[in-house]
Amino acid sequence: FTDTTSADVACIKYYGITQGTTATTFSPLDPVPRWQMALFLTRMAVPAGATLPSGTDQGFTDISGKSAEIQTAINQIKQLGITVGKTATTYAPADNVTREEMALFITRFLKDAKVGPGGTTKYVSGTSGPLEIKSDDTDYNFTDIDYWTMTMEVRNAIVNLWNLGVTDVQTAVTFEPTAVMTRKAMATFITKALAHTNARPVGLVLQA
Image (cartoon, rainbow, N blue to C red; front, side, top):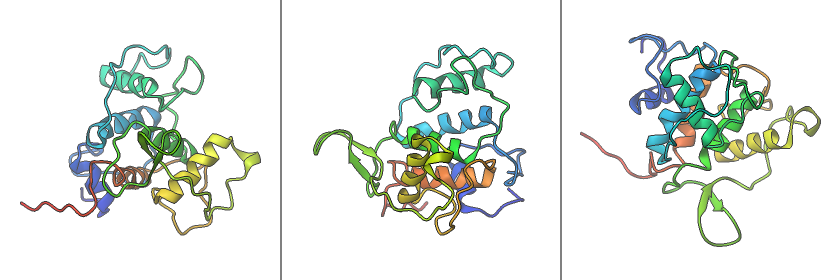
């Protein structure tokens, strides 16, 4: 890509998560529409060790104008519990992903991903058994994620990702939850999330 030198963008291109807006451009400052995010999340599943479901129709009535690949991806993230849609019957594929929506997408995605060496984990239940990628730490820097401005699930997702080191603004004091997600920020969220999965084991370097 000639329009960015981001290592995070290079990472998601390497894993086939993005194909770019053209063969040589990534358009890092462009927004991420919800249909596009569905593709990114499903392509992210394979390196993260998640199993993709069938992608059968999940009842969204506003995605019929999209390609079969996009419709399948949207149905798959519904099956995985990554999205619940804008309503029970609409996904709003043309809407841009907000930063708080991104926090929900990634947090829910990590519940389906396989834990990698060095990943931050907790027990799914109790003090033994299966692990999931999650942080129970409650500290954070952000001053704009108040309980009265968002749901508890959204706030907890943002705090979780901050403690996992996944957000693109680790040292900032604002998260800007309602702002539109950029493609560059999306690449950072995905790359840092993959670092907790089996896609990028800590300490392992391969060189051809």
